[in-house]
Length: 193
Image (cartoon, rainbow, N blue to C red; front, side, top):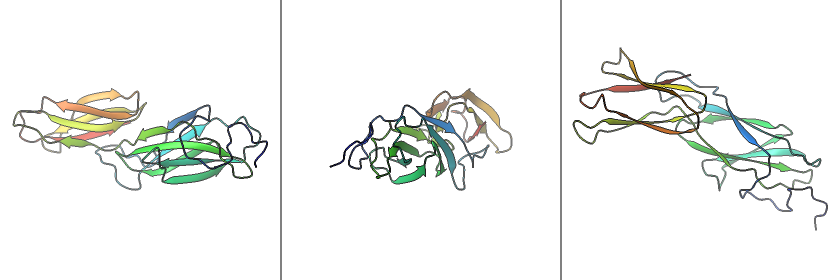
């Protein structure tokens, strides 16, 4: 029998969604982010997660759980008493889910924080035209606070911006290139800051 557990702790390990942390804020930190044509190659991108510390005095540390699915996390990283973690090697176009738990000196874990999902920018997808005069459909993930320019070219030497915007959320964006519908061939690239 376990007695005198701090608020938010349960006597068994659990990985089910719940609400424990007051805030889990995502701060973008693109360590390996290349500007220019995508997809980004190399070791992937990074994302910095931060959260408010527990108000319980019995917290010995935190574990960050993450993976592609918010129900079966593939990774768990013990970050000790730190209230931040940098997840590296995230691949463009992939969705990653994150949750944080606190644990006490006996290893008893709290319920997980709310699950946060994040789509990693850096992938540009062009769907084939459905007919000779149909527009190309271009899709790519965006992250808040970054300005994106979708550029097009017919010769891979001269590029023109056909769309530009600053993202306000993390989501997939879709654009139809109506102007390029009559062109036999058109190339695309995504530039962001």
